[in-house]
Amino acid sequence: MKTIKTNGITHIEPVPHGTEEWYYGISYEHGDLYEAEELFKAGYDIEGRKLCLIHYPDGNVCIPIPKQRGQYPAEPVYYEGNIYIANVCFNEGLILILKFDCSSRETEMIDKLSLDSIKDCYNLRLDTAPLTLSRQCVGTNEFEIVWPEKVSFPMGDHDSFFLREGDKLFFNRWHEEGEGAGYRYWEETVVRNMRGEIVEVLPGDVRIMPNGEMWHIG
Image (cartoon, rainbow, N blue to C red; front, side, top):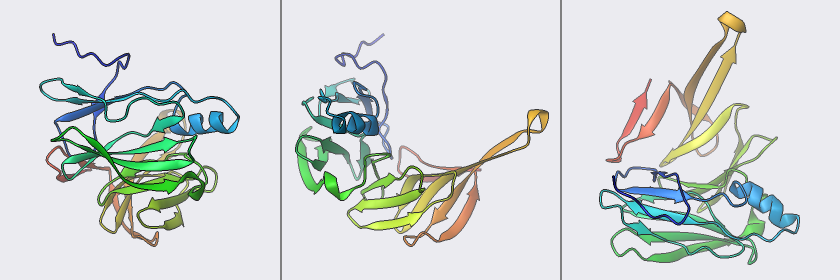
């Protein structure tokens, strides 16, 4: 058995989308990103969040962003051979878009935007492709791309964004009906264009495989 030293992180997952070489582990000192934001706005000190990347199969551990007070990185995403991270710096009022070079193992900032440019950090995440920073509003069901474009439109009540392919935006939608023995639950994939118009509805799910290929499971 191989032991991987992660400085207290006990759970790892594959970095999405399209790699079988990299895994990530992330801590939850203040809960999810939006929960840390709520605590910061309430006047609490944000200790920072630990994020590690683990390379398979050798198990080498990389720290793309040292844990810093007031900073809370979101989950990473793999894109075109590198790993990207949105790092929210509450004290500075900034969101940094960072690139971890999988070859050199170095991290650099590629862009930054003001934290005031978004309503809140609820469901703030990087996705692909291209590299996209998005968020989903609670209550209003509004979907918003905040970087690099500005896009906003309402989703369905049970929709959740999970993938972009060019001008196509993929949302998971769940349904339920009936009760007891007659209860039924199912999911489908809703594909919208950049104006929010539904262009296709697919039964089941869509996944990006480790080689980058998209699979429709349905």
